[in-house]
Image 1 (cartoon, rainbow, N blue to C red):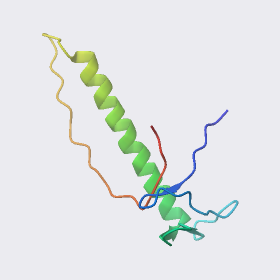
Image 2 (image 1 turned 180 degrees about the vertical axis):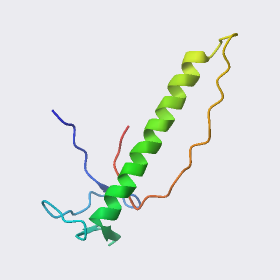
Image 3 (image 1 turned 135 degrees about the vertical axis):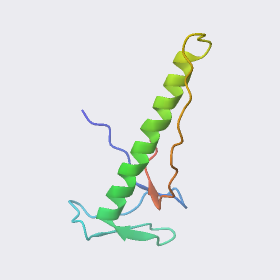
Image 4 (image 1 turned 120 degrees about the horizontal axis):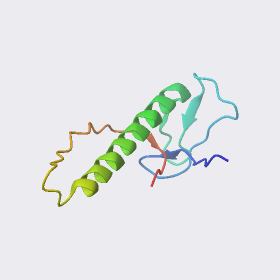
Length: 91
């Protein structure tokens, strides 16, 4: 069973309108502010957002695991932060 989450406008936090079975060139539009992009670009942005989310979770897990360890020192790397027009609440 999959857990689906709505796509939200990053500015308004309002669920956006997406055509059923969208094509890559179909528009994704916020009904509140009118922010819009193609479905293909939104998918790419959401994939990047998910990647950043997983990287942050992994860094936290590694930091927690090695906290207080005298034998192993963990230094987290830099996670590149991007600006997204549309988001999915992953927490």
